[in-house]
Image (cartoon, rainbow, N blue to C red):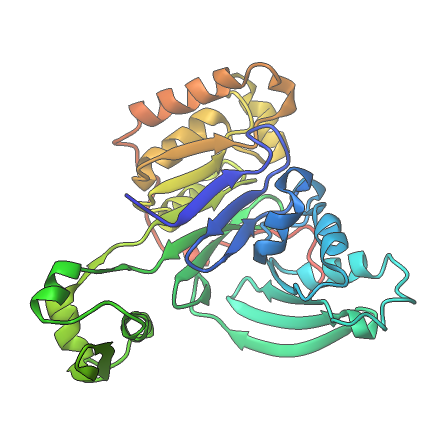
Length: 359
């Protein structure tokens, strides 16, 4: 599948988790987790519009300081998304610095924080440089279960995992690709041009079938115009193909509930990034650390039906031996095509929050 989305683990399988999704069609990028991002580079870091943080352990969140430093004094605001208690943690980071000289900057840098509640509520706050990053609550609203945000180009979905603290897994669902068939345009006597941008926008925004679209152009006879409905053009010159699905799941205890949540989120994904922290021989250690073994992750990946799966977040105890984790993951995935976690109303299964700060 051809896609304008480029996915890259910033630090490889052993380094801090940070998955950058470069959205060429949006002229921006997203980050799933923001551990050490020094390797990302300033130019690409400035492209990031949204950071989706699974949880606030240091290796998943320490890179926020780097992003803050790069963006101060620029017109490059950013939105952060995270689990319960996340706003307090962002506020604590911002409150650790002295901001006595930034009020006169020509541009204001704004951090917008979206905190996702276990019941799929969304609490939003604003932190602006002109107010020395004082918290400004922007209210709370309900979310469609599992859906964090929707744009014309993509939707980001999420699931809560248990890591002895609520931990979010994410899935980017790209909108359908809108392909314009030039030979069919020519058969209708229509040129390409800016009017096709209007057509694409109408399709992405779900405009009613009868919405008029005017094709305007100039030729040797002067200005020309023809009007069609969206439905007519979709029928005659457009082909819609499914966009890409990229899922990301890390830091989860090896439970059937976690497995089922990952499977549901990543169902039929084109690409699944999933943690495989420990070898099966170290299963007891993995359970103590609330992480997955490579074998467990391989079975989860197989059950999701993901077309391609990338194991990552390897424990540094295996430095120089990452191939062992990768091999165990692939062997388990290949052997597990028939494995199924128990089905059921998993939304009723509570997730323990040992660090919960909200009442």
